[in-house]
Length: 202
Image (tube, rainbow, N blue to C red; front, side):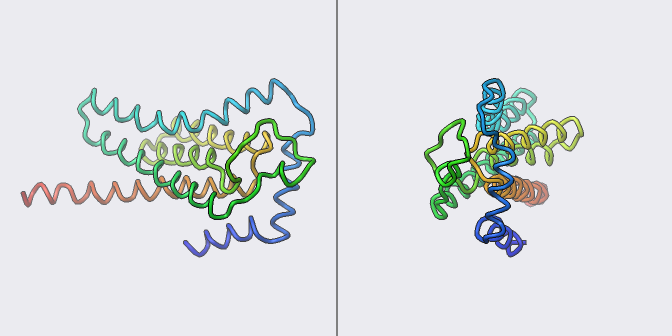
């Protein structure tokens, strides 16, 4: 799994074919004119990613306190750990790879906002897909999964529409976010299985 992930990142970000596909797809999504209403909408969707990624575990924790539900409390811890892990990985990769933003490399890409951090991977996409995956794993109902992933996909699209990320930046963010959420969820599952055994021993 790790080898597949590394190979995918190399193909998407390193090869000439991958780079051409990257910029061609971005150019198709990033419009050459400013649609003010569309820009406002996509900016709002884009910037909602960090707010929701914090609000999700905080909300679950608040409900767990009100209901005195330990299971929900552990889920909130797990969700917070997932976002912490995913954003740490994203920060490390950003400053290790140090990829230049697409509008700084290609003059035909129109930036509708400006960003100061490196491009790869997308932190907003990472946060959105971590949150969507964490919610879907912990609350596996269609009315949670469909809106969560629809919102996450809209966040990813918005980063390209705004001209601040290549598709490969967004794809990497999706993988990191979803992977971090799954890892933290899996760890929580194992800890919950061991907890009854610990109580019996005590």
